Amino acid sequence: MLKEIYLDSNNFEARSISHLLYQLECVLNFSEIPNKIGTLNHLEKFYVQENALKGPIPMTIFNMSSLTIVTFYGNNLNGRIPDNICQNPSNIQELNLAANQFNGPLPSIFGQCKQLLRLGLAANSLTGIHNINCIYLIT
Image 1 (cartoon, one colour):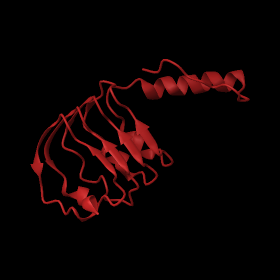
Image 2 (cartoon, helix red, strand yellow):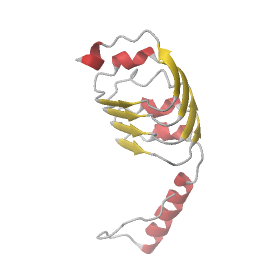
Image 3 (tube, rainbow, N blue to C red):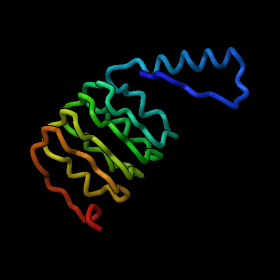
Image 4 (cartoon, one colour):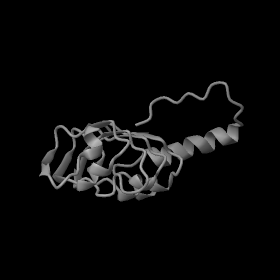
């Protein structure tokens, strides 16, 4: 939950501050990642570690080509890792899915993650690797 917000050295009006705080409250009070997250077309970094989030990762999040860092570390997310992680033009460089409850094999799409530099998968219930072409993962 948001505990501090710093808005120093800006020219906000009182009305716009209250509207901003209301919007933040609506966005931050969720226990699952909303599907609408995929509509944030200019989002570059998405950090939601250790927030007790549950449920699957919405496939829409990986439709954002501007996204470079995604950190879901330490939640209660479950299900399979989405198959579309690097399907669209992807700029994801860092993906941390560690310490959740993901299951099933790693999607073969990881072999297409050309920009991926760091991948965290520890402490899940993954069952194996399913036909990954690792050419981009090792070059």
